[in-house]
Image 1 (spheres, rainbow over the protein chains, first blue to last red):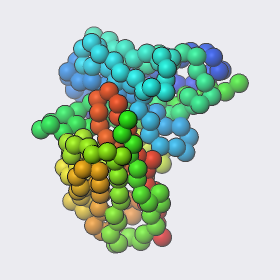
Image 2 (image 1 turned 60 degrees about the horizontal axis):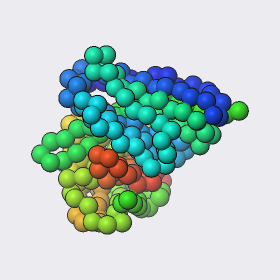
Image 3 (image 1 turned 90 degrees about the vertical axis):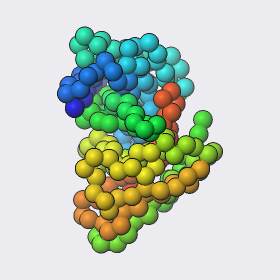
Amino acid sequence: EQLVESGGGVVQPGTSLRLSCAASGFTFSTYGIHWVRQAPGKGLEWVAVIWHDGSKEYYADSLKGRFTISRDNSKNRVYLQMNSLRVEDTAVYYCARDVWGNADYWFDPWGQGTLVTVSS
Amino acid sequence: EIVMMQSPGTLSLSPGERATLSCRASQSVSNNNLVWYQQKPGQAPRLLIYGTSNRATGIPDRFSGSGSGTDFTLTISRLEPEDFAMYYCQHYVTSRNTFGQGTKLEIK
């Protein structure tokens, strides 16, 4: 069971970037997927989640509509479209699987992360 | 939004000692939704404990979780060198997850 992020890089403020999260080793279409980010030297910040079938999406209030999560179950991938990027969006972006069992909930596994640097 | 507050910010202990990490919620949360992760430098977070007290697969039994309501604890009974890392608690809500700011467990 593995998640692998890609698509990070250095971009200028105001531009866009799309991250990808590729899944393997499990039945992708039965799990929700989250994005979580971590600014350099800081803690974890939840970004967004998409339902297993793509029917629902939720976002952190702080993103104010700039980010969009989507998925393609035929390709076992989840995407994070990031628009109007700001310097404060600089972070490592992780995707993580939404898991439940016996009424408990958690994230596992996590990908290794992809670094997004927003700088002029 | 429920705020998760971890203490202490940094905990300095020696191998073999007992570590007690605290996570406090701004309002009562369900035990089902309290999770602990370990993160080492340059690595992704790793699941340790879910549902307040259930160890994830492969997690040694020196790690234990407890608590209810607003106060939760992660205990490491006898520290091994590989346990020195950052630890985060999480209040899981599908549409509004929140993490504590973390506790850094460092070697004294």
